[in-house]
Image 1 (cartoon, rainbow, N blue to C red):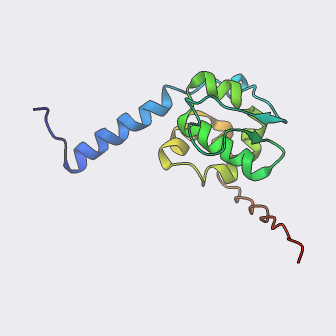
Image 2 (image 1 turned 180 degrees about the horizontal axis):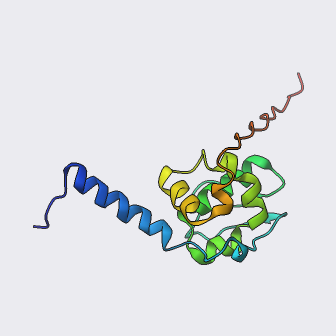
Length: 135
């Protein structure tokens, strides 16, 4: 039977391993992230396996959802192909509040460009459009 880790030391080791999973996926530089800036993006099933399958980058909520999911689930090649450096930098003050602390910490520890944006407040989400039905 494998040893059971418990207590603060076991938790710290688990957290370190979990964060290392994200760290190994990072590109060497944000400049490697050359994904689209506009249009509709359809990530592979290995990244988005349920729910919305196509994300319109012109829609702020869909753009934020795509970036959140790719940061959490994408491998290095997904990050570079699906995410755009300039969009990531623009979205980061809000996006950093939507991803897990492990994802946020790994990205900010690695990239000074993102760390420099931590003092900026997140932007308010766009209003949800309600469609009126004819009475």
